[in-house]
Image (cartoon, rainbow, N blue to C red; front, side, top):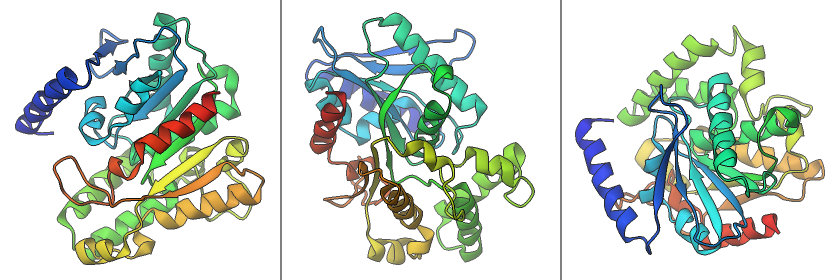
Length: 311
């Protein structure tokens, strides 16, 4: 992020923090040696907190990036839900370093707020933040003794959930060479993936371990750990926008693999798995129309769902 963009964001956040119904945001560091190890906390004034909503921003974003884009924290605050925002960094998958950071952040939150119930946590995020959240919850279910919380549910906001699929998509985006932003992102993330985890051809086992879902498998993969977990995948299905603005068909969106995951969970008995279509078109806080936005989540309905999970 450029310096001017960062300054603009900090000014905007200051205005939001000072004028959001008297809410007080707290920046909490849990590692004095690393300035990136922190989370943003919005704690209701109610003495009895009903649960915790953990939000993860997109690829390379800071926790603060969430607040101009979504009012989830406002509605959560008004309903006695504590909101925690923590970032995964320049990652699109929950590797060991990301899982360790989230764990340390959650342990710190629980230590400083001992009255919190570790079984009343809902976690999710935008784009890569949702990808990380989905796999993190699978890890929690796979080895619960190694994790600080027992998640009540998980959600994603237009997130890629199949690393094999996203690898192929990035290569198609580069080959088409239509969207400069899309090509830049594809080249950048491909290089990181090759450096950190290799390619699907050379290191399929590593990809299988990190991906929340492998749509190529005939039997259940990592999604088997979600069979008793409420899951919501939010999408803004606007094929016309994708074709006109980005020259992308449905094969180049996250929607095919998302619907396939939900269908497999439903077929295997998880009637709390939901594919949530946006009620209104997605927009960024700048006013830019974009299906890939936090705003595709109906905040009030979402918090009503959250409260039902915490009951």
